[in-house]
Image (tube, rainbow, N blue to C red; front, top):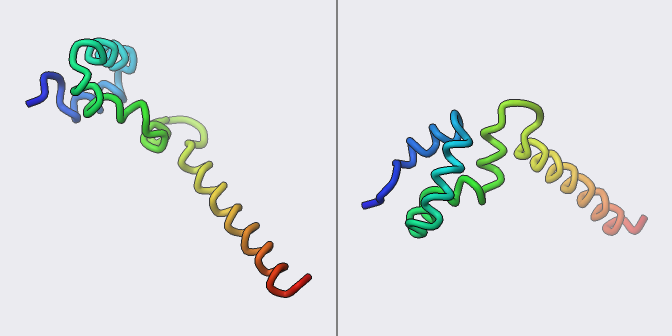
Length: 86
């Protein structure tokens, strides 16, 4: 059984009170490293999750998707040049 807040409570703190969430993270990082790694660290280490919680501007998820699509188009153009010997 985990010794700290549930994932739902942590998600609420992440969205509504980032300062409190960071304070909890510092506390559990030293007092209960297993709980920190399983419940809190994913909030900091997953860039797509973090980007999805931003409320203003372009999120990193949209930017990454655009970059992937543009890369695929450029790769397709390069392959067509190679295939047709242009």
